[in-house]
Length: 280
Image (cartoon, rainbow, N blue to C red; front, side):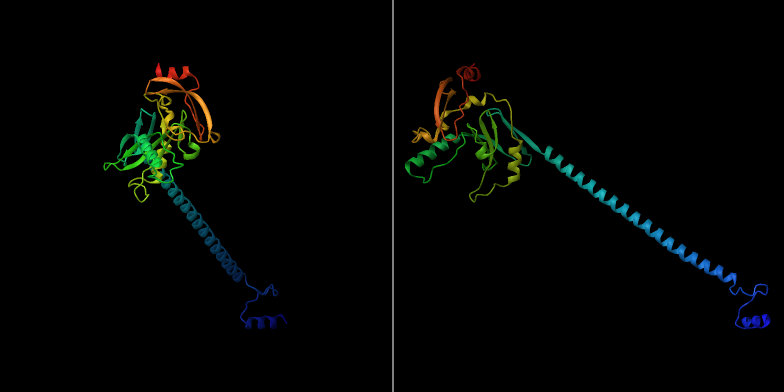
């Protein structure tokens, strides 16, 4: 029976170990299958490893590029800031005690303009009926014009002898309001070389310095009154203030009491303070 079984198995192409007739699978085939499994597993592991390394290197490269772009952008911003800081000229006005920074590209001449003459003429035309609807105009008491070579006004620094920051903006010093106003052409547009950004930059740069004479001594009641030499019709709508001011005609301090809708800001509350500041 063993011989027949062996012959039958031998006929189908399999070798049989006579000492172990129950073992039908050769060891050689097991090794081959094991090697194939190892190769497949190794290949998968290799692909995963290569893919992981590639992904890591790609992420690092992206981060490096992004960081480089950020650093480049920051360098450009810093350079722009540096240009803004260094690209200006400083204008100082010792009479009114202020200074401003002007873009170096802006070529201007500063003129101490007689704005009070314009206001007198304006009121004369209002009283004579040459101009309709004259109420509500708020004129500066002093004005410095900045003009180009063609005598076109690019902008002005307007100065009020009362605090009107809440209405006009600007900056306040000793009760005076300073603000920068853009010049305009006949179409109501900014003049060439001047933009809203430029005007804001100039006004933000405005700071105060020691004046030849204290600005309080420039104060005059003529332009704080409701209108020049006009009697107040209804004093109930105005507030009253009393104090002292330096009379530039007599070169002495004098008492004053007046009404004004914005609340007058008389520079001195005591005669001695006025005298020590403006006379002595």
